[in-house]
Length: 329
Image (cartoon, rainbow, N blue to C red; front, side, top):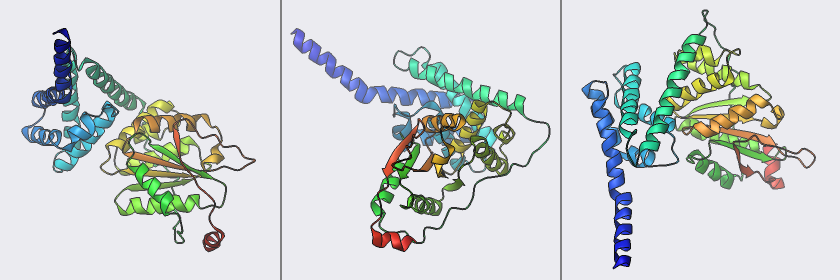
């Protein structure tokens, strides 16, 4: 009898985890949307998004952080409400997540998730407050260090490697990827081919030839923000501001943008073990989901390569057959 009771309890627990737990979570999101500050059109759009694949692909995924979920929700809201003011949409969604954190606060199943959402909102508010405090009085036009990608006109015998990169684009666990190998084997052309494909699919593609500093990279992001009229461009582009504040605002801009971004940092081995690049790569890999960063780096027998923490080696690009190598030349 005791064994039957234990089996029944285990079955009921499984049933709860499998069905009722997620229904309960969706109910909390629905209640938060209804209780948020915003007009009915925004609430209807949010409900429609919640009941789409967004719930399974983002809300239910334990590996998706609150800031990633929020960014995707915001992106879909902007697409669903093209006539609405972006500030109104953002304010509404912040209200939704504030309501959600309150509802989850004392919930036995979702209290830890509520704490994570509350921490995300506090960090988000702090980022904006610090950005407003740090904003300079004079307006500066930022110089971009991004250049046009090379044209992969002699793309030969690299289909397997390219397929690996295509899969990486949809890998939500690895934001920063690296192509490594000895010099002259086509790493740059492989990256250029991927950049070409992404551009054709509507991605925002930016290419940087190194050595450049992390500061120059962030100032180039500030130039993109300035074109998009994001008010925090003055923080991201200000070399005197703390690195974490600049990175926070840069990531927010990239992840909340309507388009996905691909950054190619060519010849990354030339930056060595630069501390600011190390910190920047770690944060990009940890916090970005829709943004991708591809490094190309040379690895020679007499030139040991140490990739920064957060960079995932995608391919050790093998030498080309002589016939194909000649065609590259």
